[in-house]
Image 1 (cartoon, rainbow, N blue to C red):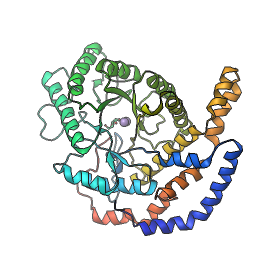
Image 2: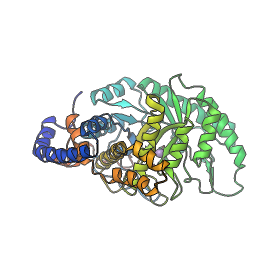
Image 3: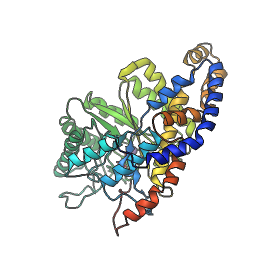
Image 4: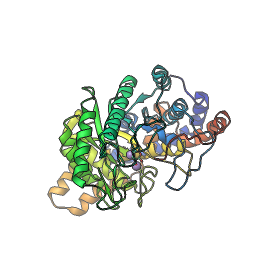
Length: 431
Ligand code: AFD
Ligand code: MN
Ligand code: MN
């Protein structure tokens, strides 16, 4: 594996911060020991954590209103892989890349596989795109794709998903994520039931093309671009469809795709209980936006989601392995910095959830000791596990402070020179 940022520079950066980290780590270790917890076990756990980076996240995204390109944006999938390589090199927590077709389509599959190996990366779930028309496409998705009234449009959308599976298969991926923007903007525009019947019919065609060891993740989203009735709007619809479509179909929870105040951790618990939790798109949201950095608005919610995952892992054992991916879009930050920060936020919630004393919590719950039950969670959430995360990075060859190391490397400046902006070119679509 070759490193993109000079490894000597990272070592130099770590050497400067190391003694402070060791002091903080020892202090935290002592505190955790008094609580009966072993810091070394937690650090090993943190080292084993992985969340995939979305290829579209390394380009500047946009809002419905505008896109403000940043310097040195990747112009193709190989440049995106370089940026993903930097994120993994410095965080040691993002070995997976989630591709999006046709944005990331390449005729040179071998070269793409080689780029991944070179950076120590693999391909997580691949994403299909039937929410935009592509150049040269025969039928438009203006009035829907997998749910379209036209059989020809549906067939084209099904075929695109099958093409994604084939390309993903050649790249070593094991899952397809399907998100459709299909829906209605006006009451009466659609027959609500017929739309879902057509969706299921199309998805049966997609599922039948899955290799035996593949899964398909159904991603729901409350609204946008359809503002009245989205075909796959909520986890209930997602669950019903995943159940109809059989054991290879599971639900994907994007944290930004719910109505404000929705109890997302309860959705996670329900899907885990019924064996249909396929994976996540981690991000954050406050109003109707769905792509803010993970943990930037509501880190307690992220912790509560991981608290349910820890509970499910205890019950289900090794077999419980939902896919963890980020899904965010940046308009005002450097995407590499935001993705590194998000990966660390998700890892933080994972480690904080491991601090919950589950035996004590179960005891408090049985005794109806409501206050102590709540405190058992709060104590874990309040614990600053930053030294554990930093030590995990150091031991795995990453940077103690990834954003600082990245800034001092001058990577973005260098890429701004190597990757001059092209008029009309876009590193990613509007996501
Ligand atoms: C879309 C959706 C969804 C999806 C992403 C990539 O909001 O989050 O995962 O883009 O397909 O805008
Ligand atoms: Mn998503
Ligand atoms: Mn989204």
